[in-house]
Image (cartoon, rainbow, N blue to C red; front, top):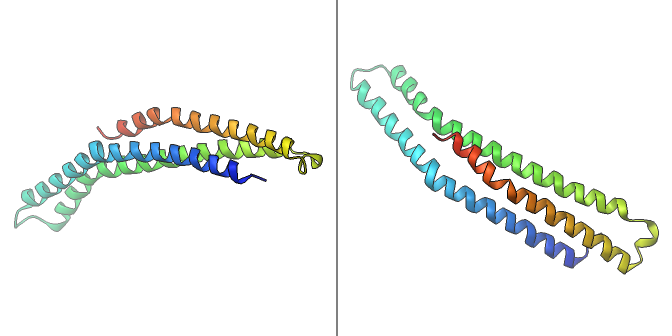
Length: 149
């Protein structure tokens, strides 16, 4: 149904939001996750230091597992937020497609002007969906970072 022109515009729109998401996640990784990872590894080293040469293996393992919890919790929360974000965006875009398909009647399929109007409405809807998703990046970042304290 979609013309090459529409497909190109949709590709540009999705590339922009994907770029915004990637940029935000790269920054979170550099500024929040890396220091949390470093703290985790420092904690694990201290587990070995505390156990010394005479400590039990189980003691080291239990201590090490405790050190990993904050990093794992942050990583899991981050992945869940990204998944939720992508799911919301995909649902919104699918709704736009469904709405556009619902507008098409058999007589329109051979009328380029009418199909252009449908595509224009679809593009407008997709732009709105992506803009709404973009507005959700900041709150998502706040939710992710709240798991990294």
